[in-house]
Length: 123
Image 1: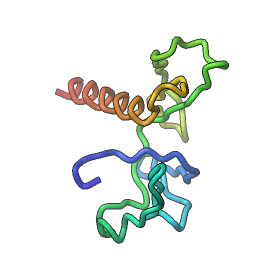
Image 2: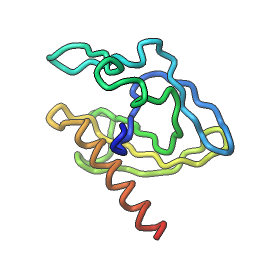
Image 3: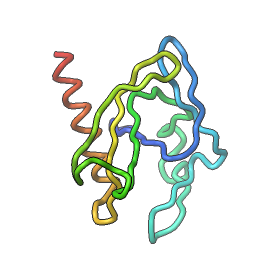
């Protein structure tokens, strides 16, 4: 997180509006624990220290995951649209969930592309 990485929440969280920004806050008490598939559960606060974590952060993207059977999209295609949340318009992405694809990689690449395009527009 200290190197500029973004965290993507896949759990329940609270959305509030502060200074005209959407803020997502964690509901869980086990904020610092994460599970790494086939390895185990780790206390990241013990490994990296508490300064690496935020209890809340601005929300600027939403991902909607769709199963193959319910989608009109072609595998690999990403549908984008705007969504209103508490009076704020945010960018949304619909992705097809495919067991053959690494979902974490697809989401990471989509976010990186989004950020790069956003930075180009700001210049």
